[in-house]
Image 1: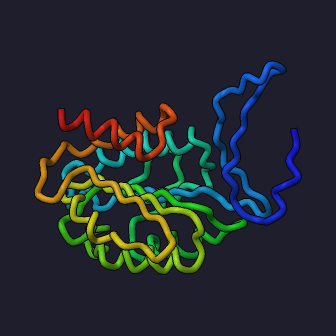
Image 2: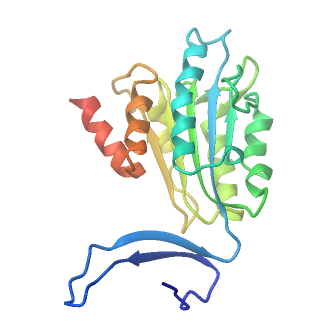
Amino acid sequence: GECDKLDREGPYQVAIYAYDETGNISKPYLREVSVGPVLKHKAIVIVAGSEDIHPRYQELVGNTKQVYDTLRSEGYNQDDINYMANVSLGDITTRTVTLDNVKVALTTWLQEGMGTQDLVIYLTGSGNKKGWQLNKEEFLAFATLKEWLDDLQNTQLPGPVVVIDEGLESGYLLPALANPPEGKQRIVISSTKQDGPIYQEGEFSNLFWQEIAKAFNVREAFAHIEGALSS
């Protein structure tokens, strides 16, 4: 069918349902549609560190293949995933992990094409309670990342930002990225709590992205694996 009531540009939540001649109505199917220029859904995958500073760096890079493949299956085009690591991963276009590349990803890259509606950021690799060791020389502090995300959400990103941090001290990212700009949504997920149990790197994401691949949303996927890891 057609609908002529969406007369303003922007995103809409539409409920689609069927009914028969006797008045029976099916369960509605919710879908988001956009009117006007189509903004992209984009993702950034960052594997911080290097083989010199993380003994399992190559393994961590390999683990992110599941992240990349799940994003692709969820409808993200290759050009809509900015993958960063300090070694290559198969035929995936890979940028080195530097402060400049992260900053470009959060600014000009998101503006390419028609712009970006919402953003997923997945982080793993070498980190501590203050931030991420991107390479041997450069460190990305959580406070700097928050400043960049605040600027991004204030100026060009209308939809939510989802940050998924799988590091040994990832629980410290939760308060660091709290309090997004007024009227904006930011979802921050960590693989550990502050001073909580530390799971083997890769264990969290293996379960989380499996749940996303089953068509669960972010909140549902996190609830499922939180129960699995605590049991």
